[in-house]
Image 1 (spheres, rainbow, N blue to C red):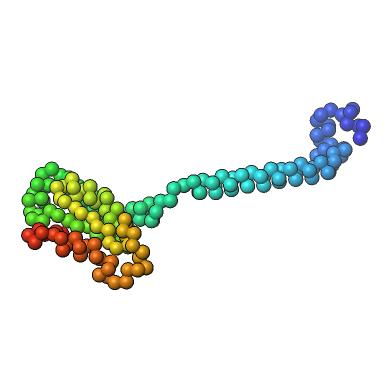
Image 2: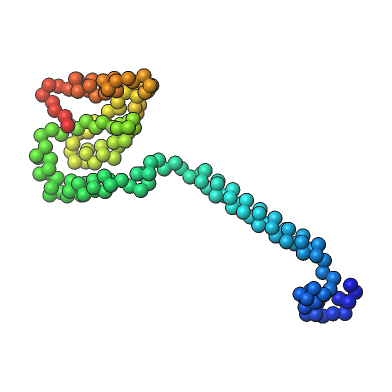
Length: 169
């Protein structure tokens, strides 16, 4: 053990590589253990960071909103035609009925039409979006809606209250 005092640093390193010298195997094991523990801690921290990131992300909704639906891609062509200043007056002149009633599907409510309403209003049309029974702002319990007539009652009331000479799409 005392031989290391008389050896140069280079000799001590070479002796350690060859298994000669007083290097403790217990020390090597503890270093390995501390390296493994450090790696485990690093992985746990990384895992917790990923989990926290996933929890903090806002819910994006349906896959069609994230990827984009094909109907929205097709609509862009129609929107381009409507926004063309030369085609817009001709398009509106040919339409006799400018009032449009929008009905949602799948229980979403009238809010699902907000982009469409803005586009229709820009072109001079008059859109109206209705919430059917149990959807949107209508707080009726959907389990109590047992017929198509009950579900579509807001639409029926709206159509009944229209003046006789007024038409809607």
